[in-house]
Image (cartoon, rainbow over the protein chains, first blue to last red):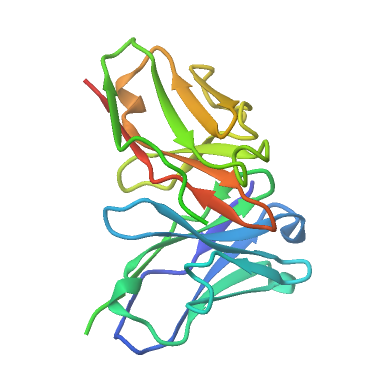
Length: 116
Length: 110
């Protein structure tokens, strides 16, 4: 059974760093890219970027370039999304999803709350 | 890279059909057969409903269908049921490993 299991909810203060994870199982991790998708409260889905775990090739949407870092460790089938300095506007639900022609399996989401 | 354009909301009665449009450009929808549609119920994870413009994943009802003409993709839901009430998002490949979502459409079943 294909599964993407994300790390738990986070509450952080502005300026702090954070790294959330997404662990894949039930399929060949390197055979698909992993995308990260943001959903701010009450808003729509936004494509942040993706990573090909086989070679860690990464592509960011322009809005997120320089704002976050996507990485992966293929040996433990895990992808990551990290921030070096959180802002209140980073408060959102973050989903990882497996992709080829479309995002066919999604993680359960990680709620990140940034508040002083 | 701009978001794809969807109507903010659509509504219809049970048993009727609706179509949600998704307008892009010749750089995304118009250039690739990689449009997908996702259904998201409140507080839930998005679910893939259509991929490659017209294909349904296993387990998705044949009441859901997709099409494309030029720079516009469409999702049609026939025989509306109460459980179809949700937000729907289109997504398209835009080249060079970039993808873009639409703004989302809220479907209300009256």
